[in-house]
Length: 293
Length: 251
Image 1 (cartoon, each protein chain N blue to C red):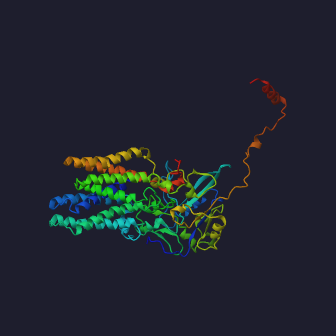
Image 2: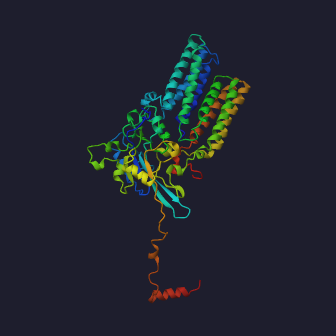
Image 3: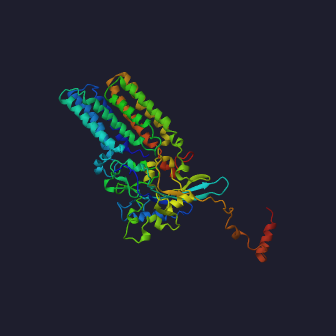
């Protein structure tokens, strides 16, 4: 799949933002007044900024309000509702903590639940697609949720749980890669099932068009696979291992470095999430078949 | 609504004969031509006369090669457009309700004025049947020429999809696949019509008739060989002398 910058920014930033809000709304840290302005401001900027970035990949963003209508069937619509509800609930918690010195223990857990549900619904947009076997698995929501929790704990300065959550997210990421690599072939997708042609070896002889098209640009992304293994190592080191180690030093500067390292590693991982995902439509063009291009 | 109808009254669709298709791409051209002038945003092209032309098409013809273990390779031309699936995954993922399946005839359509161009329906389709128009920013797909098949201002023989009407080989057939007595259903029954990617569970309405086995195929021969045989075996005169002399030369 095409690794659109808007989608990589959206999923990583809003994941971090909702993860941070999830901790803040539970009173971790117990910020009040001006300190709460800074903490919640960062959470809203990341979550809201990510949501805004997501509208950049729409063909007609002026109609984005219509995405609220189909919550009964569409995960994208559910994500729209959950994100607005999570931001509203977290806004309520922020108001109480900033202006009234209230811990907001009633609304707080609700806001935390909504923030994590938003991240899960984002993941389900990808996990629901049978056409992309790599994503169509429980590891996708597990990855998005564990990343949001790890990034949120790090941003919220929870130095005791952050290393544990970071290593857990790293393990989920490793599991997602290990189980995802063979899923396309394991599900039996191939040119034989795509065309139902039989009687011999079938191969794509000529594509329908001499140039490129939307399908190839959007769903048959090939660039960078050569470097996938190196990028995976970098994503693991910078996204999870380095920040987990930096947390243990408990130095304020180390925390800043840990956040930057985690954000960079998470973006590399999210780039791979898209770039490595094989869509079955590629089969019709002669890609993804065992032993093919 | 992006919920699928609980039942459809008809299943209008195409039956494509892979044995008959000659790969002329006339259906591609007819489809592009018709859908440039009526229903919805026209199918745009980008850089049409430049170095890297690209455009929106609702129907495309692939070509595949089958190599049997003991016979010459065979080319199969493979037209592909929306299969108007019973369990259309492109419909249920739509966040705006723009993508829908009609109860009355099962056609899957896009309400372009509600489409935000998020592209998720194209991701959900296993067949590559949906293409985002780069100019209009909305999703385009085969409408089964819904503006032809019910159009009473057209002569009756033209009330079928443009691709079917234009096919010079008669490889494309249009009809109601829910009616077992219809011509298309009988073709599917007689020729063993197949669903594409059945493992996806999309239950496509369109069916493909596989190429007939080439059991009685003639042995491979070279049509040009007889013309390349020497025409004058007993040449006389100067050329005859030259031939004999050169033949005698060593080496």
